Length: 145
Image 1: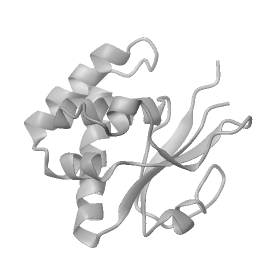
Image 2 (image 1 turned 90 degrees about the vertical axis):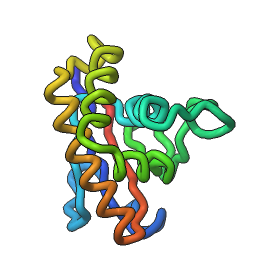
Image 3 (image 1 turned 60 degrees about the vertical axis):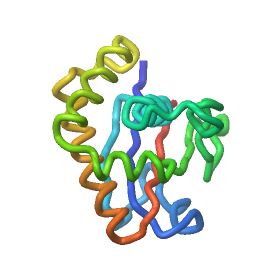
């Protein structure tokens, strides 16, 4: 079974964000997220970090597509600002708790260890903080063949 590949990255806007994808070189600050389905993960992280359950992306189970997934398995989505901010301000203990809870609930779909999940969220939190500081949006592309 081929695993998904992708990365979270910062960009000015949707028009710029669509220029990123598999095999496309870029200079955007980015965090790889290979081996997971980042759209599902982002929705779960938002619930865990914000408790969000209203009429937002978590409630609808959808994120805003910038490049909708087609038959080729490629997509780009925008990470909700609420999640970007929650990641940016979460302290180390909050990130660790969130990552471990996520890793435990997503196994065996992702086969990600709690330590790897913590590392991913810590790197993503640094990226999100940079996005907040520089007023950049957080996006993710991934390819799931």
